[in-house]
Length: 476
Image (cartoon, rainbow, N blue to C red; front, side):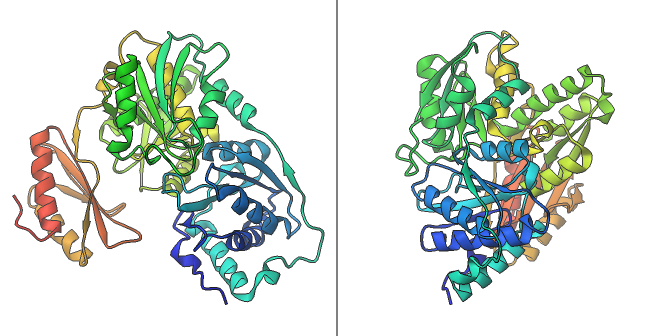
């Protein structure tokens, strides 16, 4: 019986574990076998496309997974090195279920798998991943001969290059050719944007000068972690924007499905402002095509800035509020046939990209919006930064219900209203207006706090009072 416990590293939305202690070729093969038996064959999928990032372990793990799938008579298309949105493109355009081997922004010792059905439809704990995990565990506990058991013909494994098609498709959705010339610094963080940015943004007749930072594919991340959500990982980009006199800077995470923007001053632009900007463009495109604005929906999660739903409402479109997490966003996108969706974490989802998230398409929208007007990036997004936010603050709490109850009582006493869509959200509409979200971590005894207010003083007062209550200190 194997000592590996898949429940330790098969998460709510994907697989993410240490290599080889947790995620080994044997485990990858068992997961491939289980994926074929739980999702691909019962749901009549026509095959599986498999891609991987630049980590040293990714080729071997993806090959083992492909073999596990093929053992059940399922044909596999391998696309080699790609970004996560490149895998989603292949899944959507080829009509295949998919598996992307990446640990995104996690350190070099990790790897992982993101699974999807055809058309990039998600596979999560509540939509098949738990069953895949349990069957793979059963196979591992009984030995490799069970993982490969199949009475019929094994499937074929065929290599295919989709990078050029991926780039052409994205460029067909956002045309940069009519805009003014821009200089953009791009920090790929030694991740997969080092492959995709040259294909999408360089060459041809685009009015862009791309200044590359860390485009060499290197899964050891020798320069900095490929996680632009952490401020220290943006410092090289900020310095390069100022040194080059660039119009903006863009940073991608390790698998290049998220993008972060800094303006011409080197100041970070909040993902909420980018969500509002892209929403404005996507709604305008629908209206120009003859669709009434009131029929157009945009999805946002509940901890994006209030600027996002306010912007959507100002356009006459419908704002759809959802829980945090890509499976929830994608479900709401499909249910409402939303044209676009955005999260505070810089995941951006597009109807025209099979409702999947793609940092590269969001970057194209930002570049197009800036190129279509004469002002600087700071001016373009300044109108969307009307509030002051705390950022996410984590507290280790053993008695989560008790802490949440104290905070709820405190906020109710100050005229706030309560919402429990995802944790606790308290909103005060009277002056001074503020709101906060207090959510439990799915994996640790942590409470995650996000506060936003119309001015810094109010935000800090609410932040400190709530943190004091969460941590059982006297509130300010």
